[in-house]
Length: 128
Image (cartoon, rainbow, N blue to C red; front, side, top):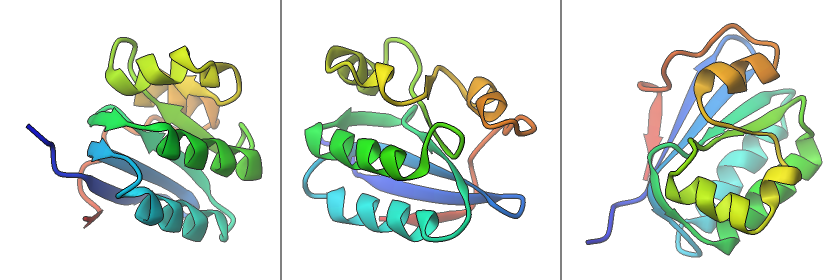
């Protein structure tokens, strides 16, 4: 059964954004994921991309994350992908965890950015 893709964007403070991908993300959702990250990176922002609720990501999404990270750097963009979830297995399989700062939860991702802990990313605007 396919899981409907959803992108949730939440602002935390003046320049921190959490982008949560839920469901399945692939070439069909890539333009929207690109647009969201591009728009946020055009500002002076820090971004946490949360893949905890993503049931599937393909190489298109990985490429977008790598490009966004190349633009922003470790100090401004981190990924949340818990150990064992499908996105984390894919990230580890292709060796992306050595290129991008990947964390098992929001607590460690927030700490990596030097931020107070973001306990949740619920709320905000949902983009489908």
